[in-house]
Amino acid sequence: MAEIEIDTRGETCPVPLVECRKALRKAESGDKVTIIGTHPASKKEIPMACKALGLEIIDIKEDDKEWKIKIRK
Image (cartoon, rainbow, N blue to C red):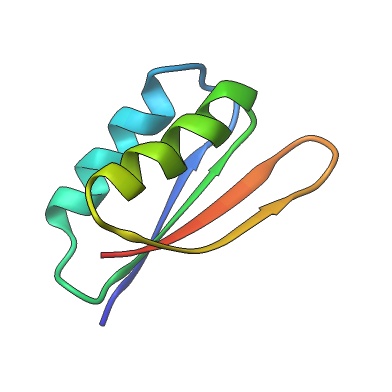
């Protein structure tokens, strides 16, 4: 199983979601994809998109300036 990390800090919508989808397309079943970003709207959109695709959200962490979302394909 691979762990893929995508850094979208400083990017605004729709870039974090687009990069997330690209990584998930390349990922194998069971792989973990972690997205790091700073755009507040993406923090809401990415989990919604993942749930719609039937993917598992493992974890969402947030501090003052950035968030990190872990997804299992």
